[in-house]
Amino acid sequence: MATVTFKIYRYKPGAIDPPRYDTFRVEVEDHTTVLDVLETLRLDDLTLTYRHSCHHGSCGTCGMLVNGREVLACVTNVLALKTDEVVVEPLRNAPLVSDLVVDMTPFFEKYEPVGMPYIRRSEYLPEARPPEAVGEYMRFESCLECGLCLSACPVVASDAHYLGPAALAAAARVVQEPRGHDLPAIFQMVDNDEGCWRCHAAMECSSVCPNGVDPGGMIMFLRKMLLTQRR
Amino acid sequence: MVSETYRRPEPRQPSRRVWAWFRLRGRGASGWAFVLHRLTGVVLVFYLLLHFYVLSNLARGPQAYNAIISAMKSPWVTLLEVGLIAAVLFHGLNGLRLMLMGLQIGVEQQEAMFWGALVVSALFTVVAAALML
Ligand code: SF4
Ligand code: FES
Image (cartoon, rainbow over all chains, first blue to last red; front, top):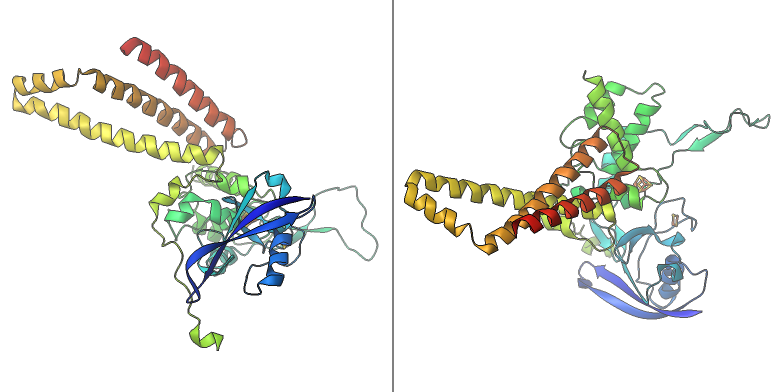
């Protein structure tokens, strides 16, 4: 058990405006996550807003900045942060709705047109035999659509039209495994100055991505593809 | 009630925010590389303008040119030149790193390449400083 100070960003249009930070002293245990703390604090202040669903790092809704870095709050252990003060803020580069909640519309506006299928046939463990009723093993694409990468990307910060790391990584996945996709359309989408050529390789997307999508590496893959295709 | 008063807030940050590039809290080594690349790039642009200015004195005759060249011999300018060498080295080496990454070479080693660019730039800057100062 330890006591940690939480500084939480608060903003509600017209109500908590200008924004401010609320400070709390919180008792945490070894297993306490940032999301646990928010849920405890919310018992005393029902106006505190944040997004979450699964509590285990798979829905991608609880993305926020903790001590300036993009994380999923539900899998961020407080004591592992090793700071006496924990600053919790909403993701960057997205319209702020309230407190820790940002509007994900701009994210999905860029992400969905790529049309990456969410579920694919698993290419792992070819020797594994699925049970009779299951035709074949399927797996989800790794991207959780959490938006952490867009928040961490300095280019997204200065250029709202940039397609951004998540959508480009999705496009790269489609190129890797087209399965009937219209590849020329995908290339047209990414081969321009708001697509994969806008990236300046800060690689922060890959460093914050909670699920190993490696958007930065995928963007470099797209570049290589486009360069070798043009030959 | 809520829907009547609710208005979709403007983005907390508008879209063209170059200063956001330099927000380094929470960023990793590659984020620093990005920032250093931009800063050294700006240094190079300023140097180029200064260089043109100095050369433009040629058009004003030998006296004017000699005057500016002797002004450029001040130890302060030499110190700035050492800084310039550091900027040129880092920008060049990191540029090489970025080009390799764009060809999908060494993407996984990009952080090590950044440290390499930093160390090599620092070493050669020290050598240059020893020779010039
Ligand atoms: S690429 Fe990674 S960081 Fe970006 S939205 Fe997908 S899971 Fe999140
Ligand atoms: S609550 Fe689902 S990822 Fe955190």
